[in-house]
Image (cartoon, rainbow, N blue to C red):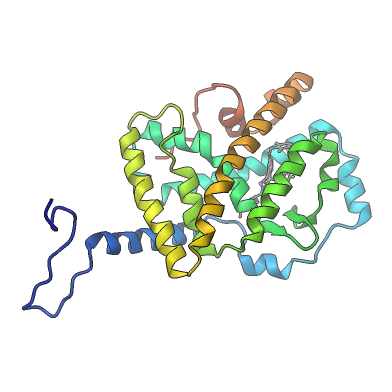
Length: 276
Ligand SMILES: O=C(O)[C@H]1CC[C@H](C(=O)N2CC[C@@]3(S(=O)(=O)c4ccc(F)cc4)c4ccc(OCc5c(F)cccc5Cl)cc4CC[C@@H]23)CC1
């Protein structure tokens, strides 16, 4: 295979232009557009979160959350999760290559990956010094979520956020990592797996390019190690939702956001995720 077929323009001795392998330029552009999409579709900037870092809930406020009924607190979190997922849908739509995928595959990737991206994004909202997460305008510890009656899931969600937050990813690294979490050719129900793999390949190159540039290649394997934990967290969430729906079928049916039910309810077809 010749250089030009591999996407390399040969050096032209006449012109002063020393050509980069086009793939490098393409990867640079891809990284920049993913970072821009991330910045445009996250609800809080790192500097805002930094400024709010020590704004924690008072004992009375925590008690108020703990006094909520199970179904009320579940509904509250379901609404917040659905809101966060909508930002992830916006993020996905702005990733070059994602929109070129067929509608079915865009929806399949969002259905299986959006919760994982939200959980990765949550690590930006975490304070490892007092083990709290930004929630409803202040930082909250696990005890605030007691009325959800799923302490093991909450503990696992906090644990994941803590470990990822401890890696101190930059916004650029976080942006490209979330694109990688989303664009996964092993997801179920994909029509054109090859196409997804091709888009993923470029995002993988973008992540290693950024980590190399930041001299933090050692973080790459730590990041890849966190991915299976995401999968188990989402499985645990679905398991808890089944338990919750048995107890409170009406709450789920009439008070949970339709998008939440489409994403996390069992095999309902997706209406509101259509990404045109
Ligand atoms: O876009 C941004 O910038 C950010 C905005 C804020 C986003 C964020 O952190 N989040 C979006 C909503 C929220 S949360 O803030 O409500 C929250 C909930 C529990 C926690 F321990 C911590 C936070 C959330 C909601 C439900 C959930 O699983 C489904 C679920 C359960 F697990 C358990 C019971 C009921 C339900 Cl339904 C998991 C998470 C984790 C991510 C959290 C992250 C992205």
